[in-house]
Length: 128
Image (cartoon, rainbow, N blue to C red; front, side, top):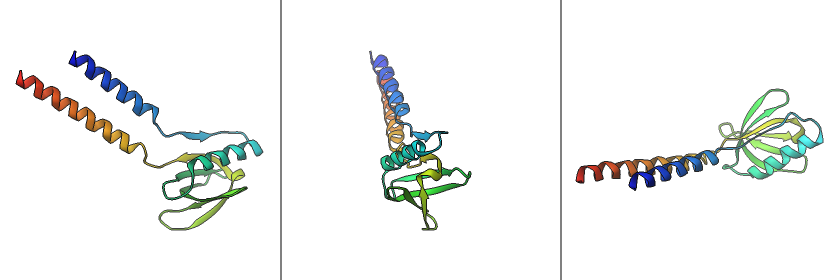
């Protein structure tokens, strides 16, 4: 009975961790529809130090930082190390990847849960 519960708990934990993987927006379309997609993605990411992204521009250059401001036709990217502010138009963007570490907390909680369950299994095996 306990083994079935343990298997079910571990399976549901793994499924929830896989379902919370970071999303990556990528499209090869050009013109206004691509710019609209980029603007929508940036809007979902938000602004502030928690809104970290990697941006690949159409000229193949890459920038990292956080979104400082979102405007009608552009957004600003602030480099964490240098503190420089770069204005980027939505048309310049090839690919956006959100790089925050929001997946770390569920991963650590899952590892702690698995470790706790394994300790209980080992301890219950010694007592009986």
